[in-house]
Length: 200
Image: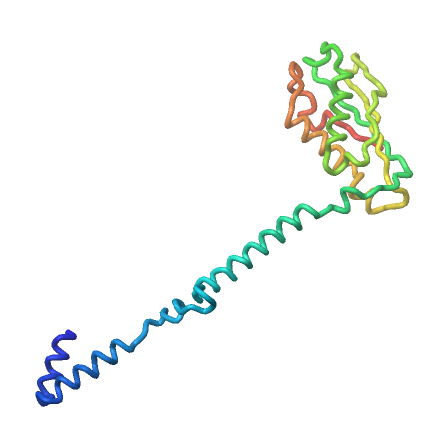
């Protein structure tokens, strides 16, 4: 297509001026620069413009990454290190009905005491407040065991008592643990929500 254009253009120009026209056209094309040629010009010494722009961009990325790393390392969660004044006690009585296959289990009360201590001692929401779990009554005849759960709580904080020390939360944590892990030889223990009773 380009050759056809040049052929048509040259056929209309007189022979003497055709050579001059060709020199002008080829000279204009030679002087035409690439749009990226300005990036290859030396700016400082042997550094080209594209090298400087790339270095600045990489420098910003490195500064951002280092800043994020330092912020992550130096961040301290204030709630985690907060020292609470737990001036009052909150007590719950947990009564657990023992299934028939578990009644003959030796040392069941000790296993359950350890289990309750572990459950509330490692709970993300209640471990800071949990004090103790003690057997109050173990009746093989009624197939029930009653535990005394004690929590240290801040005094005069109604919202804390309503949300953090609610019966639903305390019982829900225990029910979830029984569903997650069974005691060997006593798999049905605590699986029925009606088998757990919680009183204040």
